[in-house]
Length: 482
Image 1 (tube, one colour):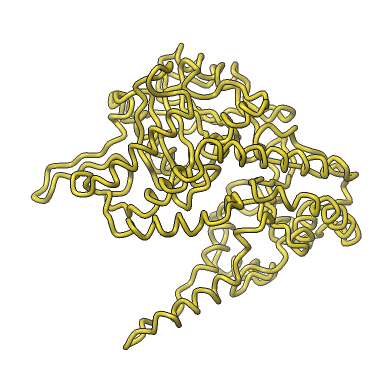
Image 2 (cartoon, helix red, strand yellow; image 1 turned 180 degrees about the horizontal axis):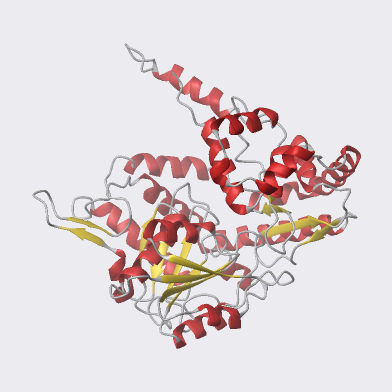
């Protein structure tokens, strides 16, 4: 409840610090998901100060706050120039918008493609199975049919022929990843863009995850295939600045090859007695804080800074991949192409979910990925520049964690629970059943210290049941404090 007389400022800050002490560490190079740490001294303070200068500025009206318009335009120009656009390029008329994150960028890319074809009553989009889940969210929210193209279990990419076969007269957008989140591989963008263009369909490149680093990795000698506006047929690209541009959350940029392609992204409404609303993005009111923080970050680090950070990240990726190759029973899902190391188990006695818990116990926070179609469960490492100084510690800890996981053995769910996971439908889940499952898995006031049991249950369940279970489990955690 709100305190009657308020709480002194320093006490409030102490409460926040105590709450933050429960979180995973966002600095130090041991968290392989969710946060992006360059390990640059003073950058947090700079971004925080910039955020504070514009936190109360409202991006709703650029004529009232031209500072935000100037910073946003600079961010779009910097991003477009990095990704093959701008004066003298193959895409000189690139335009864009700053959004709150990759999900909003992808939703807007789908909205622009859908609204460019008002004559279609049942629009569709074609997305590889490895495409980010935000495409599915966009399809759900915008009432667009999602046509998923499978990926080769060896290459982890869709084939161009399969993408071409999935395009229908109602298709308004074809998507590809550079790189994909799950495995860090780059889709065959040039081929996909070619078949999309031949069909008269937009092609969106989702470079939200690691796309910012790809031009720098290419300059460092990494064989990065064409993926940006230098590819004919690519009509839009999204890239998150709060990932490998190392800006605070949440800032992403959605680029279009020209203003005509961007126009359907806008929402305008004048048929009411208030001000005429015009929004380039989903939100109306937008704090200027994230935009100013991103502006300060990019201006401070500069091109040379990002090249150095990409080199450190590349070296960390190479060292982590070498550590994985050196452990019997582990296999890289793909040779690293970008900023991801992803591996699986080839030993039935080595339970990946137990291994994740053992790594967590040793201070390494990784991300387990469940089975999908022909793809096995895997462990995902998002690698940032701050990991580089710590990589020598990872190999011995990985070997020790594997040994401990083998000693512990695979998680064995009770037979009746396995049967439920295989036979239950989402509609059959009652509050009583959810409560019993949660209690049996140790989900009480907060997540359990070890998640292997939960992940094993989810891994055994079909996708639709996984979704419902996660909704219910997270719902149990999100309860008001009175």
